[in-house]
Length: 372
Ligand SMILES: Cc1cc2nc3c(=O)[nH]c(=O)nc-3n(C[C@H](O)[C@H](O)[C@H](O)COP(=O)(O)OP(=O)(O)OC[C@H]3O[C@@H](n4cnc5c(N)ncnc54)[C@H](O)[C@@H]3O)c2cc1C
Ligand code: SF4
Ligand code: SF4
Image (tube, rainbow, N blue to C red; front, side, top):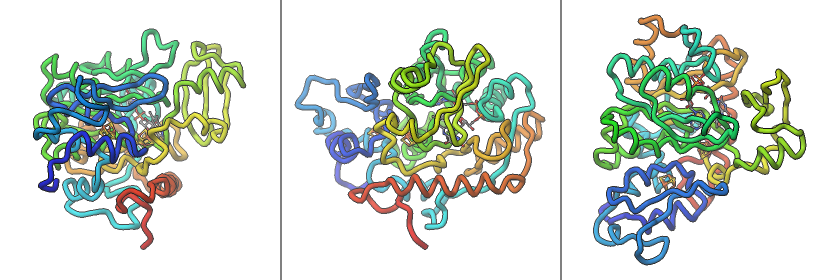
């Protein structure tokens, strides 16, 4: 960070109100004075200043010396090369559209329950359980469904054991700022925490570490990323799925995106909704996001490719490699080479390039699709 004191007013002008803010909530959990709240009503998903001081872009602590929120934001100024330098010792090359990585493999959990409840291969669930049982982490920040699941509202929560992991497995396609479960995790004594999150969220742990954001940064021990081109506004359930197709959210059992929006109902019916019909409900915070491949996670995971019940797995860091090796040695996962499905890797690069084209002209160059 430059010597200039960069605080909430800079973040508010340059990220929160410029369109760059993804609503990841990194700034909210980094705020040492608890003056940042989070608005997740009516599709907003943005941080907000809650103290009785000045206007929405002011902060009394920022006016003095506090810089924590700008240190935690994975969209503030030169975030991409800063994090690349921290994690990999260099900035990505133009051709590395999916970010820098060590290995690409296909993986799936050998535990039949984790495999069954997982969205793809259940790899994320297996990683979390392995890390909890082997004293690598104390807790994980994940996403649950509210109540009995019938509203399909995705909410952040903490996973501490196998039961929690099973309850939180699978994908919801509305936004869940899992970061916000941090407070609950530390209140229960967790010191080593894994963050599972969309691409935008998975850059939070390393940006905090690189910019020395204090003990929150030290506690975020592992970043598991989910490949992501967008999330949808909650209104899509009523305004599209129910209004046009008569599909009520309470009757839905599972959903996935594989070229189309796939919906399985409790009564056994299966429906497909063309993705182009869904675009109008793209969440505001995703519209300028350039990161499809969760480029700063320790391990990034996705479901594209020819093999439905395997997780496409991009291992980026040394800790990511150690964990994958540990899982494999212990027989917790099956792994096959990424080369078994070259189409999946090609599609990842294609979708990553597409997302980078969204990065706006007014922002710094680095995350943009660069020509070689
Ligand atoms: C909104 C969204 C969009 C995605 N888009 C793509 C895509 O375009 N292409 C692609 O290849 N893969 C995409 N994925 C990733 C894919 O759906 C799987 O999450 C990934 O392959 C891991 O599968 P798994 O079986 O190993 O994970 P699981 O073992 O099922 O674990 C999934 C983890 O994700 C968490 N989670 C679920 N929903 C959310 C949410 N909304 N926000 C934050 N955390 C959540 C769960 O709590 C759980 O910890 C997307 C995921 C989500 C949530
Ligand atoms: S992108 Fe995340 S950290 Fe940055 S301002 Fe938005 S919510 Fe805060
Ligand atoms: S597209 Fe995905 S990674 Fe990007 S802001 Fe939206 S949820 Fe976050």
